[in-house]
Length: 371
Image (cartoon, rainbow, N blue to C red; front, top):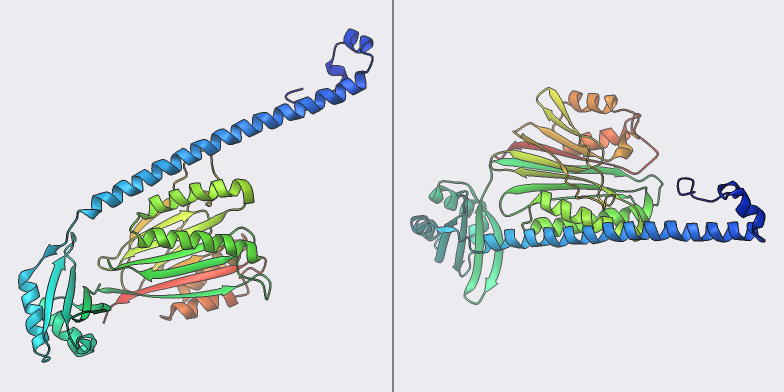
């Protein structure tokens, strides 16, 4: 009965059946109780898994807080000679400012200036003067109004530049696209590119992918390591999925624009494509999408590589190929002779080989030397 999931008349001994006055009613009540028994067993198992998932969430949160606490006490190193050189450069423009140059643990420079009427420093001439004075290329990052006038922040400019473009097409005209993506460069010169694909298409898929993308962006801006952020979000979406169901695939690209070191984190999703020169590398993974697991901790797949000027990297959602093979897509990427990631992304979506049965999105990134 336990293996089958229900009781049959022949499961009971013949003498019992012959003496039972209401055998059919007894069988019905027995099956009802058996059904309740299975429900209780399933409930206990689910409750246990949820408790374990919550415990993992608290453990991950503790790890995140510990990592953040270890960085609180880290103070950038001050560079008095560099600060003095910057003040002399400012004076060449007929301005007066107090300068403070600091170096982080990787030796990258941040310059803060306080003074009045400092807008000329944000011009090309001002940036060149500061760059020449410090021996590295600097770029304006932030401008603040303060009681004494203005506070300007310049940061060391990374030598590698990235041009990012996206092309998207919804499954049905007029319906929201269930794919969501974003990209930004943080103050450490790291480029982040995120592409999320919610289960299915339309408004429901768009809501789920946007939620994960927004949470992930907040984690990354807060300085949380990408693997820890994705693992934490996977656990949170798994608990949410107990009620609402669904899942979201994630591609997260991290690129240090100072040295070209890169990592691609994947939770499910279609392959990514890296073109270096005339060769193409297909980046895949086996991790499940966020929101599918609660019984164990799920870590993202990670591919590490180094990028250089002239490289292309493409992230796509599975609707682009509809699971029908990607030979045509790989051929297009290798044969493309232009330098525009937007042109390439749009050409892929317009190709006869592109899918039509799901939302589809292409994010293309081209890397070049900063001029």
